[in-house]
Length: 63
Image (cartoon, rainbow, N blue to C red; front, side, top):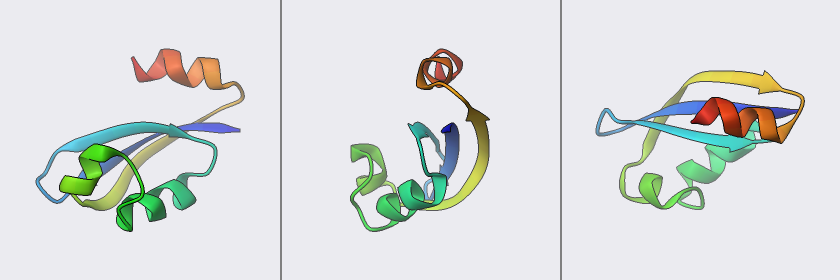
């Protein structure tokens, strides 16, 4: 399965991403190994995620 996820950053911004494991990806963001943006704006919590069978469907939803 694939997931669209949204995390809240310390500065109040929302960061959207795609992954096949939401918790693992969030943990990587927490340790600075996630996206460039979250390296400078640390994540606080996962606010939303949605499950998809195909990555292409997630990419369409992310836009």
